[in-house]
Each structure stands twice: as structure tokens, then as C-alpha cells.
Length: 215
Image 1 (tube, rainbow, N blue to C red):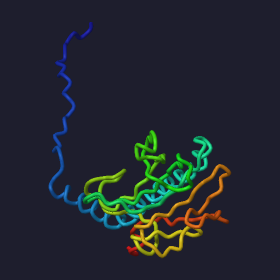
Image 2: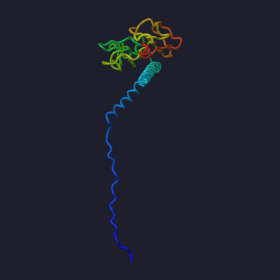
Image 3: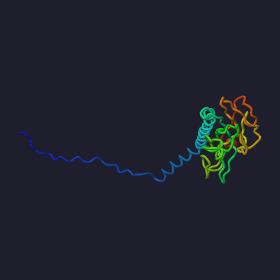
């Protein structure tokens, strides 16, 4: 005969819950901050140099592309195009060093007054400003900035107020004097100061101010 005795069955108990603390203690936070500070001190200089190098490469690439457009614009527009560096522009507290492509719209072989959309010589713009890149000395990055940024790039590895080039100028004058090359329909680079064709590659120094002041 079966034993019909029933044995009491206890309900399953819930899995034990962990009651660990939430968040971090002040000591742990301070340790993490200290580690981050140490890493910044060790690697911060290299990071800063890498960042400046990247900005310099990007800016120099922009300038190179601007100059390379001279022949393309000459062919497209049907008149010579000038590559002009400087002179320094001062407008109140703002200072910048412009690098410009200027179309010889009146075809007189010289840079005259220019603006973006010259209508006629009577408007005071016989020549055409095609494009521009500005090296900010005081102001805001971009064209004719207004506040808060000091000079970061320059056109000389000797002095931040100089322009150094080969086969282009005598390098004895500062940035208050423009340098001008003209690209004609045959793609020749003409030194407008002497009227002679540049016989070989003309170079223009483009560097970071920290190179100049050896920092």
C-alpha cells in the first residue's frame, strides 16, 4: 500500500541580491584625475606638436591649391592672372597677410584696383579678385577676422614680419611690400617687378611661428 504521506515543500528562496555601493569614492576620483594629469604632462607636448603640424600641412595645402589655380583661371577667363602675396592689411585692431589671385581684367599687365565683381573701370574695379587666403596676424581665423587670434603661420623662417622666396624677390623688404607673379596664357610665370620670365621653380616659405621663434 502506497504511503500517501505528504512532505511539506518549502518555496524556492530568491537569489541573494547584491547590495554593492553605487558611484565612486572621492579617493578613486582623485586617483583617476591624477593619472589623466600625468598622461597629459607626458603626452601633451607631443599632441600639441602633432596638432600644429597637421594645421600647418592643411594650411600649406590650401595655399598650394590657390597658386595652382592661376593657370586654370587664366585659361578659363581669357586674361592673365596675378599671384600676389601681401602687403599686410591693417584695419583697426585687425591685421592679416593676404595671398590673392587677381585677374588682369583690363589686361594692362599690372595689378590695379580690384573687387569680386568688377563691372567697369568707372566702378573703380578694373581688375578681378578671384580668390584669397589670409594669414591672420591679429583677429579671427578667416578673411578679415575681428577678434582674439594671434599669428600662427608666417612666410619666413627667420622673422614673422618677413616674406622669404626664391626667384621671386630680393628678400630685403618686409611684409608691407607685395610680391607679384603673373601667369600668362602660355602658363609662364612673369616677375612683374622685372618683367622677366621666372627661369625655374619659385619657392615661398610657409611655416609655423613656433619654428621662427624656436619654441
